[in-house]
Structures are given as C-alpha cells and as structure tokens.
Amino acid sequence: MVDYIGIADIQQLVHRLGTGTFIHRLAGEIEADYRRWAQFEKTARVASHSDVGVIELMPASDGAHYAFKYVNGHPKNTAEGLLTVTAFGVLADVATGYPLLLSELTVTTALRTAAMSALAAQWLARPDSRVMALIGNGAQSEFQAIAFHRMLGIRELRLFDIDPLASAKLERNLRSLPELADLAIVRCGSTAEAVQGADIVTTVTADKRNAVILEPGMVRPGMHLNGVGGDCPGKTELHRDILLRPDARVVVEYEPQSRIEGEIQQLPADFPVTEFADVVAAGRPFRRTADEVTIFDSVGFALEDFSALRFLHKLLGEQREASRQIDLVPRLDDPKDLFGGVLGGSPARARLRRVA
Image (cartoon, rainbow, N blue to C red; front, top):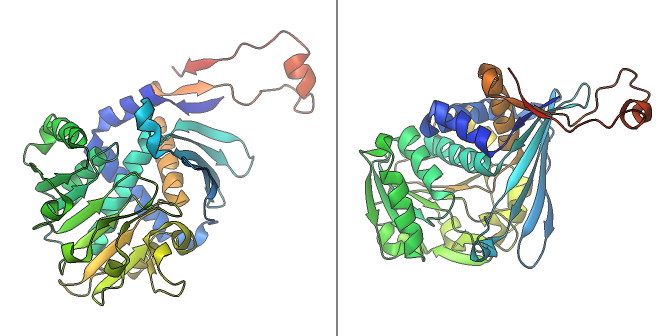
C-alpha cells in the first residue's frame, strides 16, 4: 500500500498547522536540502511545449529518495474555468524503487513556491523590508502574501493586476484571515503605482510571453525583486536593463535550467549569476550594501518539490490517523508470479483506505 494525499487530505494537513506555519516549516525543509546541494542528482526539467502551454516532469534524488513532479502551465485555461497550473508527484524509496507517496501537488506547489520566495528574500532582501508590491493577483498571490507576512514581517501589501476582479479576490481572501489583521492592503491602478515605496516587488503573472511587467524606471536602490512568473522559454517579466543594472545581483535556483527558462534567458550565456545553494553555504546575508538591488530569478526547481514531498510524508507520519493509502503496487506471496498473484485468481478490488 502506498500513502496517498488528495485535495481533501492537503486541506486537512494545512488547516491543522495553519497556512503560515505550514509554509514556514516547509521553507525550513527546503533550506535544509539546499544546504546539502552536492548530495542531489540534479537535472533541468523535461518540458513538452505547445502553442497553449507546457507539460513538464521535474525529477530529483538524494540517493536515498527519488521524487518527481508532473506539472502543467496553461495560461488560457482560466477562460474555460480551469486552473492554469495543476500537478501531482511521487516520492519513492531508492533502495527498492517502490513508491512511498502519491500526492496532489497543485496546492502544494503554490505553498512551496511561496516558501521558496520568502526563504530567498530572507537571505537577499533588506532585513527592514516591510512593504511589498504584488504584481499579478491570481492563483499564487495569496500564498505569496501569507509567506512574506509570516517570514519577513511584511506589513503593507500593494496590489496590482490587469484584472481588477483578481485584486478584489485577493483582498477579500486576505482580509478573511485573522492572522493577517495587521496587514495593510492597498489596491493600485498600475504597476508603477504599486511599486512606489515598496521594499520588495513580487511579480507572479501568468501570460506565456516575453512581457515587461517591471520597467527600469520603477526600480529604486535597495529593492529586492522576486521574479516568479517568468518560468519557461519565451516567458519573462523584467526588462533586461533591470538585470544589467551595475548595482544589481541575480540569484537563481539551478543555473542550467534558469538559463533556458528564467529572466536571464534574455542575457548572454556568460552573464554572472549566483546559485541559491551558494548563498546558503556562505552562511551570511547575500546583500553587500543597503542600496544593492537583489533579484531572485525563480523558475521553480525539482529539489523544492522533493523537499515538499518528503515534508508531506513526514506530516503523515506525525498525523497517521489522517492518512490514506492506495493499492498502487501489487502485494504478492510469490514476487515472481505477477500473473498468478494478480490475474490468475479472483479480481482484486481497487482499494483506497484510511489508515486506522
């Protein structure tokens, strides 16, 4: 039997901890895994692109566990009432090859993306950062807001989206959370208005195109830019001149992948960047001066999904009464007799059971 986490299960796991606590604990797991970066087998994700979106596989292994995520990105899905991003994943035991966990990752990806964004900002942003502009108020935005409030102490959130209904949705959801009672929310009429006075700017838009969400004139010394939405070839959010600022420094997750998919796809292959694992290994804040502009060129890396799946599996161990299992792999009296053990007798009923 294989542990299973569906939508109802992730709801229960997150509600038991609280969304902010869940994200904060997950960020700790991700940071711990980045600290042992050299132990991981790493590869850029395998992507299948179409005119309307992308389907990707994201594998990672530390030699003891193997994990992969299936994820899509289809920006036009919302016009049909569908999610832009969906995902599921598997955590497996390397010693046997057996799957340990099959889990939804649609919700978990949003949680881990927010955890990674806030974790990177803890290392890159000015420690006195209290105002964040959030450009793009779709499905990822609540998670980003909660993470930055919890982990960095953001107290003012300045919102902009080309769809005013998205900003209204975001504000409504955030105001319903008691833990965000001290968060001031300001809806703005443009990106330029939203970034005024912001210490951190998070861009998390969905269009699959080389967009210019942030113009050079919008960026002031000391800002931290959290670029989340530019995450596939031909999809960017920052004007290239922002990356070329003499006072700017760029951090990526896994350089070979970011060269293809990140904001730095706009720049020559020898443009200098720093991998986040090196920031963590250095053990000190990345920012050298308060006036530097730091840029986290985030595309999402498989190690973060590995961390998320192991974290979920750990939570099931802590809350075993909430776990469910499925018969994904046959259990045989004779492992050499697959036919006789499965098809030679009475048909086995598919089982999805909750562990007592």
